[in-house]
Length: 94
Image (cartoon, rainbow, N blue to C red; front, side, top):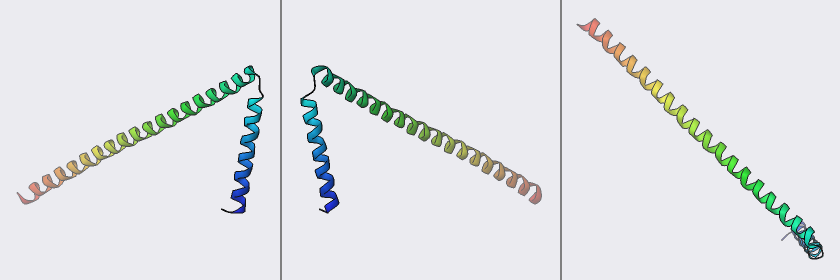
């Protein structure tokens, strides 16, 4: 473990200990306020995750729809080209 990693872990541990000490010395109302803030943050993170998932699903759906539409157009064009070639061949070799 490098010096920076060790120092970072020690700093994080120190901050955690300080936060724990401060929480233990809070009034019940202050503790409830902290709990409420955590619950609110949890809800916001959950909602953001749902929004991201919805956006991804929409993009996937649109991509699939666009691909199906492009395939259908290419297929129609190929069929039209085939029919034109077939008609030309029948006219020229009949």
